[in-house]
Every structure is written in structure tokens, then in C-alpha cells.
Length: 169
Image (cartoon, rainbow, N blue to C red; front, top):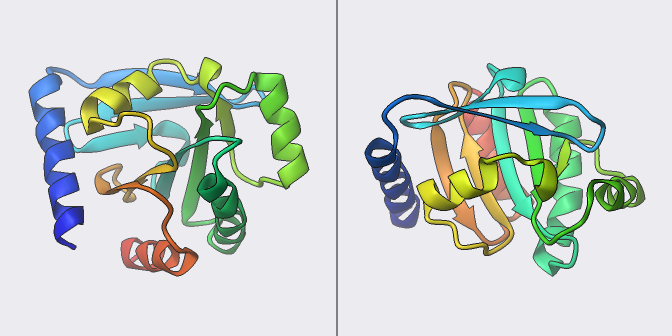
């Protein structure tokens, strides 16, 4: 819990010091759908997922914990589809076409974005959360788009579900 509070404090402190106005970004999923994002003082607002809890996951196709997390995310996305949006950005260099094949092979049921189509989101998160590229890297945002958790490393499925249930209240 202390680690969580420190992460939120650091993220919020960085946000306050870096931003004068809201930052607008966009990225494109492997299916060509645009996702519009606004960086705010306390988090990120995903225009397409307003009112939903958002799990923003940075992952790699060769990362064992990232691969293990995929089945957790698929189950959670199916179970909580009305409350949850999972957005995954692949950061180990797959092209859009390669990621499309990977998503099909793994049966991923949530939006995936190749880093080449993530716009300014990756450098933005790197700057604001002091993320240095470790994966998996998860940012959990509540229904208002405020950061509730920043986590480097894999979380067990039951911890992810607990977060969803808490934030859905």
C-alpha cells in the first residue's frame, strides 16, 4: 500500500510540474481505430472509454510475465466489458502487421497498439511516470481518468479484479 501511495504521489507530482495545459494525444489500434487521449493533472482521459476503468498496459511480445498476463486480461475484459477498457501498447518493436498477427494468435479481445502507432503516449508516460521501459508496466485509471495505480511488473489476476471491483463502486 505504501508503494502504491508513493507511486501515485510521484506520478501526480510529475504531472503538476510538467503540464501547463491539458495535453492531447492520439494513437491508432491495429484495426485502424483512433483512440484520443487527454493528459490531465491527475491522469489520462480516454475519450472513447469515458466512464470506464482503464488498464493501460505496456507489454512486450517476448516478455514472459507479459505473455502470462494476456489470459488474465482476456478473462477480465470479457467479465467486466461494461466497466473496463484494457488498452495494450506493445513496446518491443512489433510492426502493426506483426502485432495484428500476434493478437490473432493469442486471441486478445482488447485494443492493441504497436508502438509505431502510439503517437506521443510512450514518451509522455516515460516522462510523467519516470518509466524507463520495464515491462509489463500498468497504469490503472478510475472512471474519471485519475491514476489509481502505477505498477511495474505483473499483478496476479485476483489483485486486478479486486482493483476493478473497488473502482467500480
